[in-house]
Amino acid sequence: MLSHKAVILGYGRPKKERRKSAKARGLNARQKRELKVFQINPEHQRYELFLPLHELWRQYIIDLCGGLKATSNPQVVQQKLLKADFHGAILTVVRSKCPSYVGTSGILVQEFKHVFKIITRDDKLKVIPKRNSVFAVEINGFVSHIYGSKFEYRASERAAKKFKLKGTIDL
Image (cartoon, rainbow, N blue to C red; front, side, top):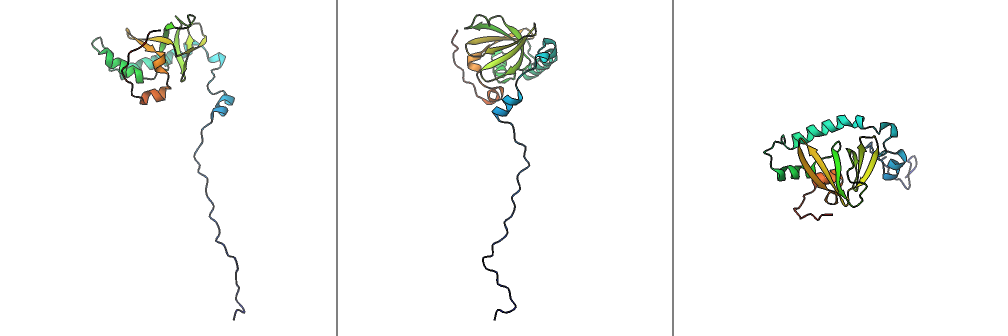
C-alpha cells in the first residue's frame, strides 16, 4: 500500500528565529568608571567655562519661581527650590563639621547622591559632602540655605519626592 509514498518519521516543525531587539542598552557602573564618564578633564576645570551654565541656571530658577519678586512667599520659593536642579548654581558652604569646607564657594558642576562637585574661582574642583553641611544659594538678592543632610538624594529622585515638613537640627 505504501509503495511510491514517502513516510517521514519524527517530523518536527522548524523553529522560528527570535529577533533580538535593537534597543540600545546603557552602560553599567563598571563600564562608566572605565570610560571615566563622570571625571572632568583638568583642562576643562576652569571657572570661566561654567559661567554660561550659571546664567542658564539663573534664568531657570527665575522662571521656576515666577520671577522672584520681593513680595514672593518664602515658603513657596523654598518648596520649589527643594525640587529644583542645582547644576550651575553658585553654592557657598556656610556651616560644616569639617571647618576647612566653610567659606568654599563656587559653581556646582556635578551633583551625586552624597557629594557636590564645585569649581571655585581659582579653578579648583572641590568635592564637598552633603552630610553635615549647610549651603547658601543666592538668587537676585534672595538667599536660601540648603541643609545637605536633608538633601541626600540624586537630583532626579529629589524632583519626584514629596518632602515632609520637619524641624531641622543645627550642626
